[in-house]
Length: 97
Image (cartoon, rainbow, N blue to C red; front, side, top):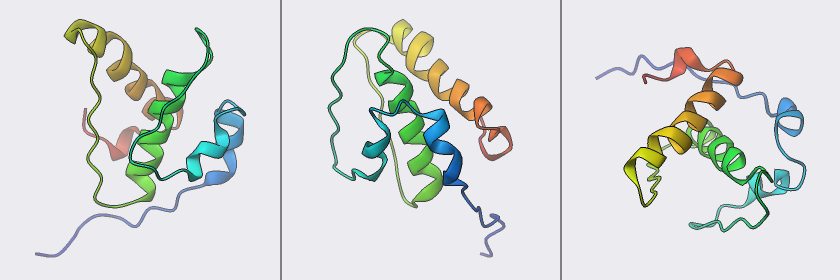
């Protein structure tokens, strides 16, 4: 079966402007688990969403599982953040939501 997927060129030059400078070096971290520390509103959740989207686009074969204790919290926070990053980065055409 022939692949109809387009080759995607990812422009990483804008990532420093879109990412909290504290977390930016962690884009290179390829550990299975990543533990982020920081106070409230420090950008941990935003960076997690950014890194997930980045890795989905930059690398093949990923599956991500995002969990929270309460299902309603998951939709209102994590899922909403992922959608926000997709829209902010102008990637809406690449994702089916």
